Each structure stands twice: as C-alpha cells, then as structure tokens.
Length: 353
Image (cartoon, rainbow, N blue to C red; front, side, top):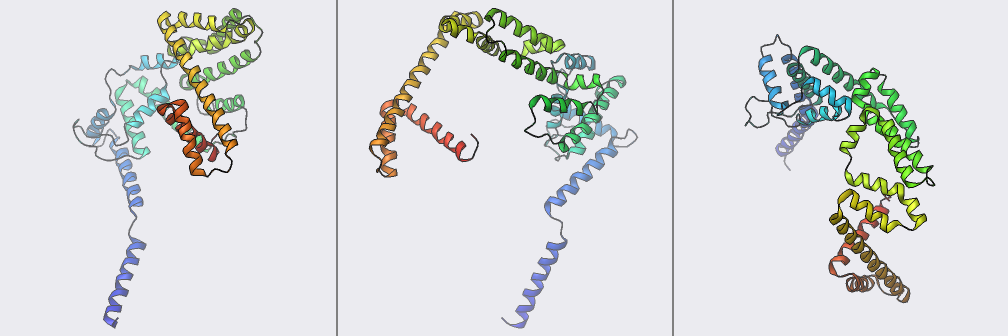
C-alpha cells in the first residue's frame, strides 16, 4: 500500500470515528424529538397560545368516543363498581400509542408520543370535555393517580409476604395519596373484592361439616356483607357458570358424604342451565372419562414397553411409542397428547412448573 493510499485510509477511519463519537444515536435523537413534542404540547395547552384551538381539536379527535358518559354517570358507575376509573384512564392512554392527532379523521398518525405528551393531552381533553366543577375533580384525581403510579413503581413488596398483608400495604400506600372517599372511588371495588375473597376462603375452610343448604346461604351472606355497595355490580358481572361452580364446590363435601354427587350435580346443572344443556354437559363428562381411560391405558402400556425394552435406542424407542400411542388413542388424540407432553416438559425444564 503506497503512502497516498495509507493516508486516505487513515483519514477515512478518522472521519468514521468522529461521526461515531459526536453524531447522535438514533435512539437519543428519538428521545429528544419526543421530549420536544411534549414541550410543544405543554405550550399549546396554554389557552393564551395561538395553537390552543388546534390543540383542543386534535385531542377531541383523538380521545372522543360515541356516547361518552357524563361526569355524574361516570361517578355513579365508579362508586357502584360498574366502571373502573383506572381502566378508563388506560383506555385513553392506549389512544396515544400511534394515535391520530390531526383534525382530519382519515389522516395517518402524525407521530408517536412519550408519556408526558400523552398525559398533557389527556388533561386538556378532560378540561374541555367536562364542565368546570367536574373537570377540576377529574384532573385532580388524574394528577394524584400519576403520583401514586410513580410511587408504586418504586415500592417493593416481598413475594413471601402473606396476601392479606400485601393487600393491606397497598391499601395504606393508596391513602398516602388519596382521601378515603377518593380511594374508594378509584380502588373501592378492587379492595372490597379482595377482602370478600379472604373472608370467603376462611369460611370455606371452616365450614366443611355444615349442612350444604346452610353453607350456601351463609356463603352468600358473607359475600354480600363484605362487598357492601358493590354487591349488585359483582352479581351482574359474575358468569352463571362461575356461580354454578361455586355452589357445586360448597355442596361437594355433603354430596360425597351422602354419595349423591352424580344426581345432585345433574340437578344443579338443570337449575342453572336448563335440561338440554345439562344433558350436553353430561355427555362431555362421559367423553372426558373415556379419554382419561384411554390415556391411562396407553401410559400403562408405555411403562410396560419401557420396562421390557431398556436397551432400545432413543430413535427406535420413540418410534415404537408413537406407534403405540396412535394405536391406543387414535391419530388426532395421540398428536394432542404428544403436544401436551412436550409443553409440560418445556415448563419443567425451565422451572415454570
């Protein structure tokens, strides 16, 4: 390599090094762009700015949904547990992810947002969407929730802590930020459900010898008392099948003692789902029992085969077991069984089970 070529190579490497040192990385550049957009949004949120009208229209276009609740309806539903204010906040936040912030409904998303810009736009939307007495309340809740959320990111609760103690610690932390009435408005339904579940678990453990009818009645009395104002909302949201399973579980001890499990299970199914549905459920039970019997038959034969052929090579052993599975279970059921076993082995190998 002549001196001229060496010089060109050296200069080229020097230029690349300087660019690498001083040219902003794409990630940092993107962060600065998002920060600049958030700053611009904060300036636009000022009613005295020239961009305020456009800013309001952008947010209205981004967040408005058909048939949005009035403030009074929002508070009523949150107080009864029929609506979660946190879920509503996350619904608004989800619209910031690549959301369209132009006034043209058919326009492509203008840019992505960082959390700061999203929060500024949500606050502006709340201010414009609701009358002053309402938006002041919502914005105060919104700002306080952001502070609470930030504190929760830094809070560490040991996984070894018993669940009731964890729940109590969360409840205490929430009241460091919210008044009791505001905490109930935001977290009341969640907390009541947790407290009810603790009480019901305790009752279930200590009532195994109670007559089934009395046990079921007492269970729902405890739940109704623990849920309080949220009981109606909980009943409305509870799937019928969940309620059926709960009653079946509460009656199970007595049914086993009396040997009436089959007849009473059928009666409960007819009560909850009707006679035809009860028949279909009984048919599914029969199919499950038959499948379980076939699997137990295959596994017994597989264990016998492995005992009798300990020196068989891995490839030949797997081939023979596949043939045995197919003969005993059928092609589709054998393939499903193999997938289940592979999944369980994966969980065990990765300490997930």
